[in-house]
Structure formats: structure tokens, C-alpha cells
Length: 583
Ligand code: ARG
Image 1 (cartoon, rainbow, N blue to C red):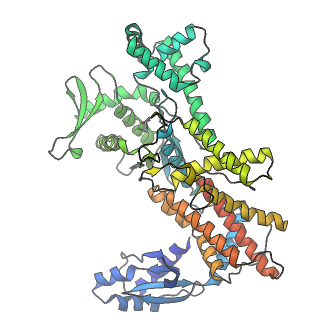
Image 2 (tube, protein in one colour; image 1 turned 90 degrees about the vertical axis):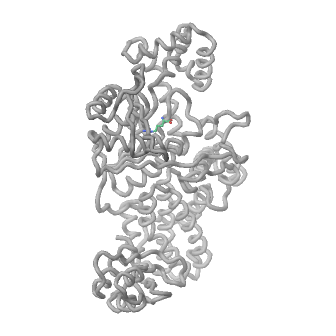
Image 3 (cartoon, protein in one colour; image 1 turned 90 degrees about the horizontal axis):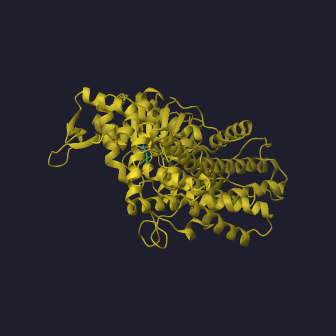
């Protein structure tokens, strides 16, 4: 149980003793200013209103029944009836001591088991395989990965689903093009080495050569009816395209694995069934040859229902049909309690239609939680969506190589004493970390400006700043010749900066709760940035290794340092960002 929960229980008990009905909450939150204590309980105001009594009187009655012996050294009533709680430093010190022992025993921070373990499907990354991954895939990939890691850390059963786009009309054109390359004796890996160029070639071919275009159309039909030659070409194409994505995932330190891929084609056999069931239940109707569901729930202002086409007049199925089949699979086979979709903001109508229809058709139960978690656009410094100088899409691979290269130049300037091997490791971790952190530290739903200079700065709310803060603590242990997991003795808290740091360290799990509740990783970034700043103040004000420092204090402060480092490391790891011992 974290501190806020503990206080919440205590206050709620005191409310009961003061005659407050059980359904009225205590509303304990961290205080915004230390002058008002460490936490405040705001529930007396609302409760007093419901009970028709002056809020200060109720706050008085609650505090009279409040027993915070050993937890708080002072409580007071402020303003119209807030209860301010000043935690006891000895209490914080003992929690920090317990935490240190736990961290030590398990070799890292571990979250307590959740009250209720859920099966949570996280749908993220999900690129289309016809083309190479570009910056448009970055946000879904790294935000989804951070949230998946955090839910897992909290003890949930997380099932990653990479809903890759491997089906659809473009594949006719692509396999026809591939067939020609292979016919000229080219190796598939070489032909598809630059997927983007290959796609452009195929497209030009399609647009300028009528025979080729006919063949491409014929190949779509053949592929969809299971023709083995077309299937084989398609499989070669898909395998290579997936290999491209996997190389990016490794480069990006993203946890997606081959077994997480469940592409669109995996649902092929279910599509006809989805359509016939929708027809049988009367939800889908024929409309100009196509099969359509009209959703009144999503009608426009004039009352026209929202149309969802589930089968085209030529018999082809659509993106929505596949998503319905995927949802049914997630409900029936994966037995998900919740499904989280990280897809950009432009697909909101699509997701809304799919969710509404899936519920209406009974493909998912009423208590399965479906969440569409959109994100804003990555902008260039010119304020327009991020593009290459000539206005093309930026390949993810090239962007990441540039990040590592830029970080490498910085590292060469700053850390001349590192070996070549260490320097390249640091360049990789700093470059990739910077790109990811710049994205994750902004409120998910906002647009943000991609700026190399800002993200690679060693000052401010950036990955390099946090990675550097971590190495500083690690170097302290190296200098002292100490193992950070071998400390013992009580933790004592004896200075303001020390207390602020310890309290913040103890709020880590509660912070993760806020992050996962709304899938907002920036809350964790802000927390880590505050943690690093609080560590710096502590380190300035509270000597750790100095000659005059008493042995017990030194041992205590070293434990606090170890906890700070471990919390930064774990927090960054949950964001998918690596740390290093030196930089
Ligand atoms: N492949 C799609 C795209 O690139 C994203 C798929 C997202 N997931 C889903 N279940 N629809 O736009």
C-alpha cells in the first residue's frame, strides 16, 4: 500500500467515526506546496455540503477521530476545511529502509501485486508492411511499448498485439513487381533492400504499364483465393518486410517480438463469418451492392446514421471487418479484460465505429474495456508535420541512425576518457533515449515539435539529463569503492532536501498508477525529472562521503542514493530507455 492509500484509509475511518456516510470519499492528494503539508484530504468539503453542516466543523470532527500516531507529526485544518498532513520524518525513514531492503533482495524495484490482475491486450506499432516504417509509426510504437511495460510491472497479464497490415490490394502490385525482379535473377533480400524505393518502382510501373496493372489486379484475386505461386511471392515479401520492422524494434529497444505479430491476414478465414453474422442479426444490410451497417449511435447532426462498410460490392473486405474479427479474437481467444489501441488521432471515427458495432453485435461483452488512445502529430521545427527537406516521409531507420550519430558527436566531446566501445554504447543509448523521451515526455494527445537540439540537451527534462543523473550516483559508489546493494543500518531523515527526496522516491508506484490509468507516460517523465532535481538538491545540501560525515549518516545517505539511482533506472527502463554506468 502506498502512502496516499494508507492516509486515505485512515481519514475515511475517521470520517466514519465522525458520522460521515460511507459513500463519501476522503480525497487524499499530495499537497502542491510543502507549506500545506505533504498530503491533504479534501473530502470534508464535499461531505459537509451533503450533510448540511459547516465544512470546518466537520473537518474538526474528523481530525478529532484521526489517529496518525507514528505516521504524521502534525495535522491542521486550512482554508474552508482542507486537512493538511505533515508526515513524520521517522515514518518516511522507516519506509525508505524497508524499500531499500526489498530492492536489495530482489535486485531492483518491484511493484507490489495489483488488487486485481487483468488480462490487457495492447495493440501498438502495427505498421503496414507494404512500405518501410517511417516516423508516422514512431509514436504508436514507443508509447504503446512504455504502457505495456508499465502494466506488466504492475503485475497485469499483458498481451502485445502487432496488428500489421499485410493484406490488401497493394500486395497484388508488389508481388507482381517482385516476380519480375526475381525473374531477372535478383535475390529477394536485395530487391527488397530498400522497401520504400521498391514500392515507388512498383507504383510507377502500375501507373504507366497497362499490362502490368492488369497482372497486378489479377494477382490480388489469385492471392486472395489461395493461389500457391502468389502466396509464395507474398510470403517472401512479408518475411523481408517484417525483418525490416524487427531490426527497427531492436534498434529502438522496443519489446515487440515475432510472437506478438498477429497481422490482418490472420483473420482472413473469419471475415465471411463476421459479415454473415451481421446480416443474420439484421445489423448489416445490402446497399448499392455493398454490405453496410448503419449506426444510429454515431449519427451526424442531421440525424444521418454513420455507415460502416463491411464488404465491398466486389466481395472485398475492409479495414473495419478485420478489426471486428480481431476484437472478437481478443475477447474469445485471448480473454481480454481490456484492449488498448495506440493509433493516431485520425482514426478516431474508424475506432469508434468498430467499438460501437462490436458491442452491438455482441462480439465483445459489456464488461470488456475498449480504449482508443490517440496521440498528436510529430511536427518539424517549421511547425508543419515532420518531413524530409524535400518534403518526403522520413524513414524511421534513417532518423534513428542520425540520432545515434549526433549523440556520438556529443559524447566524443564530453567524454574523451571513455573507450571506443563504451562511447558507441553510450551514443546508442543516449541517441535512442533522447528520441523516445522527447516523445514520451509530452502529453500524449498533444502535437510536439521534433528538435534535435532540445532532445539532446544535458539540461532540462530530457533523457540525457536523467541518464547523466544516474551515472553521477553510480560514480559516487565507484569512488567510495562500495557495492550499492551491500549497505545496512537504519535510514535516517534529518534535512529538508533529504526528506523531499525520500518522500518522492516513495511515491513511485502511486505515480505509475496515474500513468497506467490514462495511458499517459509523460506523468512518469515529469516524476523522474523531479526526482533527478530533488537528488541534485539533496546531494548539494547533504554530504554523503565527506570526512566529517558520521558513519550512520553516511550509511543512511548511501541507501537513499542507491534508491534514487534504482528508481531512475527502473523508471527509464519502463519508458524503454537504457542507462549506463558511465558517460
Ligand atoms: N496498420 C494501421 C496503419 O498503419 C494501424 C493499425 C492499428 N491497429 C488496429 N487494430 N487497427 O494505419
